Amino acid sequence: ILNVEQSPQSLHVQEGDSTNFTCSFPSSNFYALHWYRWETAKSPEALFVMTLNGDEKKKGRISATLNTKEGYSYLYIKGSQPEDSATYLCAPRAGNKLTFGGGTRVLVKP
Amino acid sequence: GAVVSQHPSRVICKSGTSVKIECRSLDFQATTMFWYRQFPKQSLMLMATSNEGSKATYEQGVEKDKFLINHASLTLSTLTVTSAHPEDSSFYICSARGPLAGDPGEQYFGPGTRLTVT
Image 1 (cartoon, rainbow over the protein chains, first blue to last red):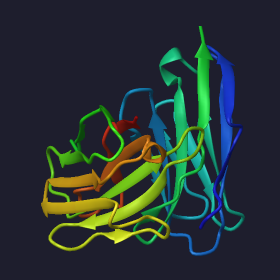
Image 2: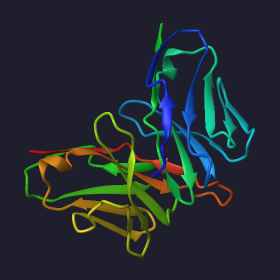
Image 3: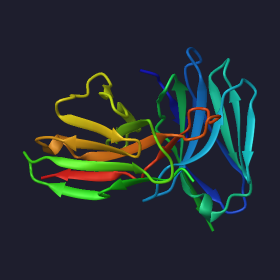
Image 4: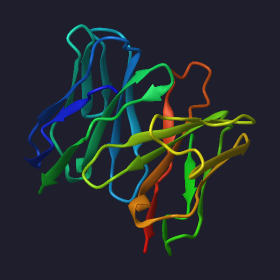
């Protein structure tokens, strides 16, 4: 069983501020890293799939980086907005299987 | 595109009864679907991988006779919790493997089902 850790577990951000949080995972048997955004009562939404060491992906104000050698990924939110409030999940993939971290719960305060 | 629905969203049943949860890919065909479970304050845990037309592959510690999975078509997988007990109360969520040929193994999720066994 992979040990996937996300930190912090939760954070409060003032609207307009930028923030970032971490996903750490075992670097062995790595195939890809997935990030999802999960709003309450909705389906988890796929944000990024990252495969290569040094990968950087961006979607609007959200971006992510990947370091496969040391086993971590950062997700950044620039200029946070209330609609960014959600739980952000990371999941490394080995073969077909995703192993999820516990998530970082982000609350953006107006 | 790549929308997955799940039904029901909530279900309450009595101990000893069985409950069926449906997972559908609405706008794509999914040869592979996955079932996860989430206990309070824990992460999503993979229960089983469901392949269309064949038996599901269960993760270690998941009772295949208790959690029956059927993937009879390319758009529908069902999870039946048999003889449910209060300890089966949990949040169950499915996903379907992405439809695009170049899609790097993306999974698209349904909204989940909250099961409460009384």
